[in-house]
Image 1 (spheres, rainbow, N blue to C red):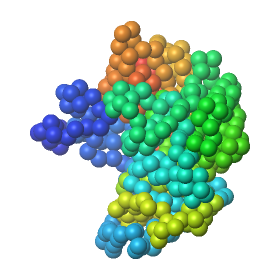
Image 2 (cartoon, protein in one colour; image 1 turned 120 degrees about the vertical axis):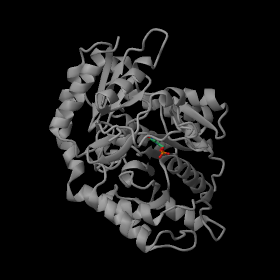
Image 3 (cartoon, rainbow, N blue to C red; image 1 turned 90 degrees about the horizontal axis):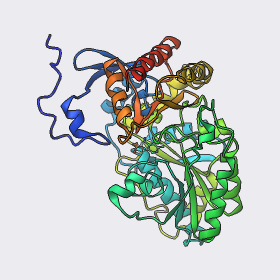
Length: 440
Ligand code: PMP
């Protein structure tokens, strides 16, 4: 069989997201199928999925229960509007999520992505303050080196300098706390000891802008896409304290952390800090059908509904909010998580994961290693004058060696499906050792 029979002749027209298009198209990495822990490439190689796709395939690929649920759903009800109409699965799913999440976080607004979830969470915060007669609270506090998706809202609160360079001014008034990545925490195991006081940046920004102008503070409990940056011990609890003191809503972006990544249903559970609004996506449907959500507290929902003066209390939504296929995928995914106790499985693998990743400490160019739950990052020193070059080489060499990783600049991130075996963890890190050793 022609090994590349599945390779399309023309790669030109797909403008690829977050990709070096020219470099990729010169030597493409194409996956044509996937099962459990592996992708299969167009030339028939099996690639170990070290990143659960994009931190999203938490139960592993092509799980029959999820596939069948989507197939059944599409044959039965392909689409139904959720504006002024509805269908059962959306209500059932929302109720199940409310059960799963910390008490009080029980109203679910469905979106199609994490980006839309961030925008929706921000609009919920604005609507809440307006409903309370505090419509002047329009400013958001984000944090440097945070990612909340690609929408204008998420981009504004996000703390990625390249967004400012690429797109200029932000539409939403925002201010940013400093990131929590401190050199003295290098090679910490789990959450770092230093840096709790960085949460006081929130109070500093409140003093500068005045609480009466601030709607919400948004953070990823554990920043993922910007390089796996962990919250210092006590940091999130301190944010909660300050937000409460000034009537500011606390939003956790749990797009990566929810659904078992840290060994619990949410990072809120893991850290014992409950936000007012939480955003979700990725593991919600095991990535089989796109779906996100903003989950708001009972108090927020009630306030918005009680005090709105128009028929439609919250003037927001997407054609595909609560799409039947996404709901079917999510319900089946929640079943798989529960039946296989996958969150607990992640928790039980975490010590081995931590032990194994830190064995890369003395490898060439490694300047930091970070881990929590089933997430890890290995940071390489940037090559002189070419930041990101070593990272890009890791992507290429790892794929050659049949491992998929995620790279941000020179930081290699790992977040395998929660079904990963101990042997596969060993394969992942021994492959990475070889790859890292080969890079100048
Ligand atoms: N928030 C976080 C924390 C994310 O990691 C991501 C995606 N990596 C998003 C938001 C955006 O999600 P999406 O790509 O589904 O829009």
